[in-house]
Length: 373
Image (tube, rainbow, N blue to C red):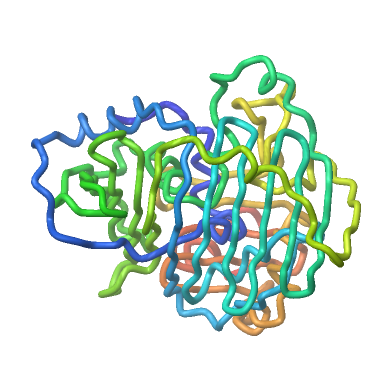
C-alpha cells in the first residue's frame, strides 16, 4: 500500500513553515452515510486514481497546538502573501479555486478583511483588503505546463488544502504505519470513506490521522490529526463546501480595486511561495523540483527529524513577536514545543524540527556535535 513518492517525506515531517502552510479545519459531520464496503487498499487506490484536476470549495480550519494567538491579520513573507504562521492557531476560513496545473486562487477570510493570492500561469497577485494594497510578481516559468495539459497539478498539490495534506501523509505510508478503515462520514454534504493512519512509532507526538475520501471521485475532502494525550483534534482540515467542476476562468484574472496601492516585486525561484508553480531543474526530484535542496532528514518514519542549515529558517519563525514569545531558552539555543510539533533553533542558526518530543531533537543535534542537551 505504500506509495513510492518518498521525496515528500521531509515536507511532511516539518519545517514549521510547511506545517503552518496547511489550512486545517473541523470536519463537517452529518448523518453517517451508507456506502459499499471497501478495504484500505481500495480506498488508497481511489485516491491514486482520482481524476479531479479542477475544483472549488470552502475550507474551514481550526488549530489547537497550545500556541498564543498568531492571527496578525497582515501580509507576511516579504512578498505580500498571507502570513502562514497565523494558521498555527485559532480558526480560519478560506476559499480555494483550482483549474489545472497553473491556475489557482486562495481567498483567506479574516475577521474584518480578506486576502487573496491569485496564480495564473507565471503571473501572481497578493491582495489585502485591510489596507487595499496589492503586490504583483512574475513567478519562474514552468515550460512543461504550457505544452502538457495533463501535467501533474503541482499548484493544487502545494496549496493549503485537505488534498495536499492528505497526499503528504499518504506518501509516508510504509511499515511504520498501521492502515485501516474507519466509519464513513459526510463531508461537505458528500458521502466519504474514512482511512485511518496510526503511527507504529512510540517516539512521535502523532496519535492517529483520519482522511475522509469522497466516495464518488476519490478526492480527499478532509483530514483530522490527533496528538497523543489530546481528546480533541490538534489539526483538522475539511471542505465545508466542494464542487469538482471547473471554476469560472474569470476568477484567475485579478484587477486591483480602485484606489489600491500596487507594488511590483521581483521574485526568484528560491523566494517563490512554497506552493507556487516552479520550473523543473537538473536537480529536480519531481515535477516542480526540490523545495529545500539543502534540507537534511535524520531518522525514518514518524520520528524523523528535519535539519535546516544556518540561514534557512522560515521567515517569521523568530521575527513574529507572538511566536518569539513562545520560544523557550534551552542549552545551545531556543525551542518551540507544542502538542504535535517541536522545533529547536540553535544559536548557530541551524533548525531541527519534527513531530517528536524536544528530547529527540536535542539527541539528533547532540549526535551532530552540537551542545544542545
